[in-house]
Length: 280
Image (tube, rainbow, N blue to C red; front, side, top):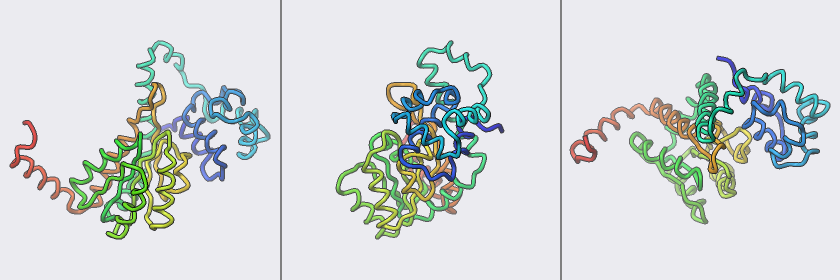
């Protein structure tokens, strides 16, 4: 399968030691991968919310003489897509849907290598209990994952509210035997999430598995295993189809690593029938 423009850009940045400002530029480039080769340094600076000199320094940090050299390279690795003008025929709602379709396509290409997800599944399955963190925009992702995970995992603990008790709940999970923490991190990234991951990983000694909108998200420095899934930005509020689907993929990988997952599901189904829980 041919790499997407975003995947090609991702490869350009992998393994680089970038400053927070440079990660912000890289993140913006990945999110607008098809457009970036045709942006001026001023336009890219505006897109990323940084200064124009920061864009020039970013290009030099990647090993280019300046931004023009970087842009020439981008035009080689991210050629113009045929039929790009077709988007003009769509209204803004359709464009948002097509944007999410592209995010899902990128996720499918990422999952061509299943090793990171399989590793994550083993880490999550082995953690008893399993804390699942997600605040603000990501709280629904954490709750959704926790709801389904509780059907197969013996002790899932959603952490979907911030505040001073958050560290206490991480400590309680660690004392109870937790070895890993799953985090859903979506923009805008709350400061509390970064602080919680720093605490969970540095103080509590948990292995942090993160689903984030980009490999350059602020939580990356505090994650042992980060799997990116882009959010849609075509509407007033971001859409998160790809992160949600990635969460379900992680559930599948966790089930594969739990030898009694099928038995637990059958037990729940039998109980649900006996209780008349669902409409048939």
